[in-house]
Length: 140
Image (tube, rainbow, N blue to C red; front, side, top):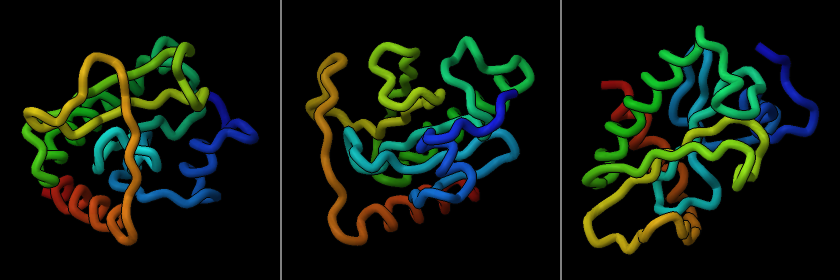
């Protein structure tokens, strides 16, 4: 396990130094809404420790990381999603060099094709609303 990396925005979110719409906090992981979501409710799951890629994740954290991903993939149905797209980039296309797993809510006919990820924006109060709905779904 590595210590927080200076200048890493995800380490700053984990430590509370940077604001985020957090939806899940566990011993080894934190999940929060992506500020530039593919679809509203798009969640990023990160390990608390600074780990850059999936191959760098310690074996002792794999089960907890995947369990949190499963819970998030189920929780997005609270937003009206019929399913989800789950993805991890390792180095290439990794906008922040801190391991993060994307959970993107999906509905049939939503227009997402292949690996082209159009981005959207939240309106006033929408990010807080989506975060609250996900937290509620995760609590059950």
